[in-house]
Length: 357
Image (cartoon, rainbow, N blue to C red; front, side):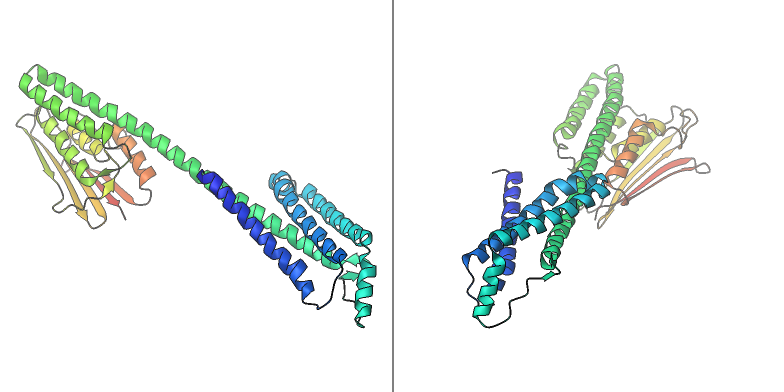
């Protein structure tokens, strides 16, 4: 049995239980407390009234509220409800006459030498019947409206989750080709210099591709995997760097292996290598990952060189722009990203703080 089928079965059983309890208490248990011997016509009348109420409840629940009230046709809904109330009272009155209930009840109470039990009528109008049908219809309307409201919330949540999943997949698909395109260009350049070095680079790249293609299928990765991935990336990039470039990577001293979004740090690191290396001047790239309880921090600092013409507001790159969008989707309200350019120190710094609690 599917989950949906099981849920429908449980809902049906709950409805049956509620109606059984309601019917027994109001239409059968209460008359039995009067210590009066009723004819069978009385119990037939009680059963008819009970089933009319059940029919009115589901007619309102399945047809009137969905077709009229929930489609802003309030006037039509109110008119139809009034018709249902009148129809219930007329059918109830018809059942009274058909079963001769007035004569039977008069005979019972006169036989016991006491005045008849009041039937809830005033001037020929069935006040009790009106109150009970109004109560049933009110409960039906309330429950239906609440169910629709809850259904809309679940639907919006499902659509939002689907939208986020689709957008994340799209953003991740953009980041990966962007990274591999740059890396393959680096390896291609190495093939002209050192074949052995290029083979080592291809091996590292295949290990990184395995991580991306297989280890991140569930949308999350361990922090240790992400750090190992960054180390491989830095090692791969260092193969083509000159002695003028100094790269320092500082991992967490005692890392708590929490789960994070995969390849979340890569665009920030990649951005440093892309824009923080000069062809003529000494260059320094500092990359540090630290962890304090549930707070994870990444700090990347690199130099600023005129030949790259880096502008913080305009040239963030595909990977960096999409990573900021991923942060908005995955860690909304739980991250802080500071991107700053210090002209005096000639440094460009990215400081990301993630609250993983």
